[in-house]
Length: 309
Length: 242
Ligand SMILES: Nc1ncnc2c1ncn2[C@@H]1O[C@H](COP(=O)(O)OP(=O)(O)OP(=O)(O)O)[C@@H](O)[C@H]1O
Ligand SMILES: [Mg+2]
Image 1 (cartoon, helix red, strand yellow):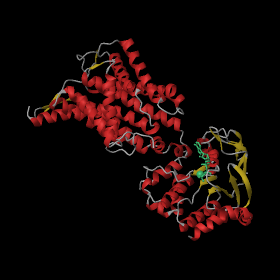
Image 2 (spheres, chains in turn orange, red):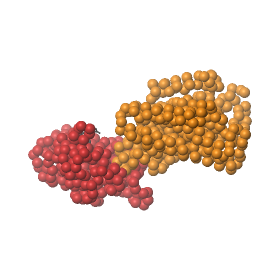
Image 3 (cartoon, rainbow over the protein chains, first blue to last red):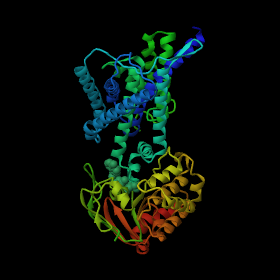
Image 4 (tube, each protein chain N blue to C red):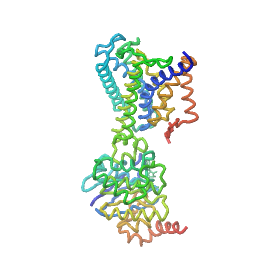
């Protein structure tokens, strides 16, 4: 492989990882934008989403890498798996908000954030105790078709991941930008009290933010499984922290920023794994987190600083 | 009677702000609420909107007690605010801000008609409809804030210091428009520091002092009241000549 081939290959890999981080980063940003809350339970909603996707694929009789589908059955199975995964994950997000965070809505200080850490560990342990500590083989129904671009390889599976992620991100973007509820979400993020006095029911908006963010995290969790061919109760923390970095990098609270930040973090991970060493990936990513927080706390595109003003 | 406060008390924690306050506002009136800083004027507005809940007393709108209703329901019944310091949604466009004013209403011919009405009242707003609201001048923001409130088709418009930070000529324009809005049938309850201007367009006024109504009556009478002249109008006239 020439250097150009390596670069292209890592760009392909980076875009796949980046799509996953972007989906996950959106959940941090949506909730932060409205509540100024860093929702650490999001890490493990992603992890649970990955298991929900696994379960749905198994219901279709898929296991391991042997059973391959094509055409309509493939699209149908993937569609069903994504829809169920996103619905369940979104529901978990809503439940977390209703049961654990809403009672703390008017409590000042870090109580809500600490609660999200607690919820994160609860989800983590529930999965550990029910499905076990060993990592699970993730079924992959996509035919092993490879396209060669120079020396680089592009899998059909990767193309499908890109398509799904692009649809979800565009869908979210247009929802937030154009729909009535999306506008209410933006208005609430910019001035919650004024939005309320326009007739916006702020609690509904908060539920929507948790639902959408968690649903996207679930989709991200399924993409993790499809991409790496495994899942485990452990996957939430690393991916979650990287996606959180992506949200901060793009300017936490900023929806397009989270998408771009996610893609950038994915590319950085892929490049550092290729040209440095995998072991250094987190050093680089978290150095970026620290540098952004120190020198440009509002992120690359952000207008919302991650401090209360 | 469109709006009535009956012995309303409000608290922020231990801070007792409104104390046994009574207001009554008839349909079609412009009523001014005057008073010094921190006496509870904005708190009055927030109590009408339901952002602050009274700890005692009743708020009656159109014959029904509303003090326990959520804010959205009050908006639905026809109360809309022009908030202190405009409070536009700074990163939304002017048009989106107007849309937020009509949040609880259906899109359709009525909505389009109301947008046109706002554009007719404020041609400047039409010119700037695609601009990000946070980049407007203070005067332009005030026009958008008023337009946004009108988009709710309110029966009662609650304005908190509409003249704040505006140049004298512009203040006159704003007050002309307030009168025009009133003539078209909207009742107006207006907080003002600019007592002179407020009393020149209001039918009646209340004077609030540390959370209590200390004076009320026809605007004309209050204008002649020596207490008012000293406390509010005197200051304003000095301010206006410098
Ligand atoms: N959310 C709040 N929490 C605690 N105290 C508050 C809150 N809002 C207002 N106050 C206090 O209540 C008192 C009345 O405030 P309010 O905003 O009603 O005054 P105002 O008459 O509108 O004054 P100004 O002319 O300066 O706008 C003030 O002492 C203020 O500090
Ligand atoms: Mg005030």
